[in-house]
Length: 173
Image 1 (cartoon, rainbow, N blue to C red):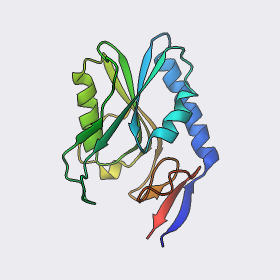
Image 2 (image 1 turned 60 degrees about the vertical axis):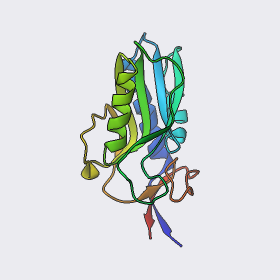
Image 3 (image 1 turned 90 degrees about the vertical axis):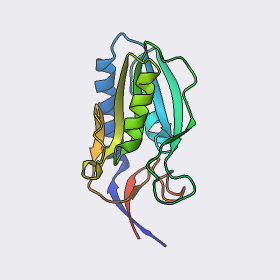
Image 4 (image 1 turned 90 degrees about the horizontal axis):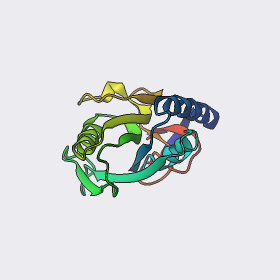
């Protein structure tokens, strides 16, 4: 059984989410915004974040992707399992993701949404691991930068467990 070591407590996360919400509010002031939540990991962060964004015209969309298939190692080939459902042509889009790791998936997502005609596509990630980057990705808003360690909680999972934790912990295997 793995052990968990708390890295980021709930209060730190909520303070950072509130600050991100204020920055995003200011950036999109007076403009409608389409938020695209990347499932499954970003749903907790996204729910908290959109409540901090002051904008009467927020549309929420969801995407689900896979790069693993039935393997435990990424194939590097990104598959869309669930795509956005509304027309994004001419819209400002904010992608909300739990973690930016290698950058492969998010590079794919950003290109996909631009190809759907979005007038702008920005990225807000709760966690960034720049040391793991393989593909360059512009992250417009980052909650917390962490070293290369395996983390869970606040939407992040290990074998579909620990998403419910209100804090982020390092998994010690």
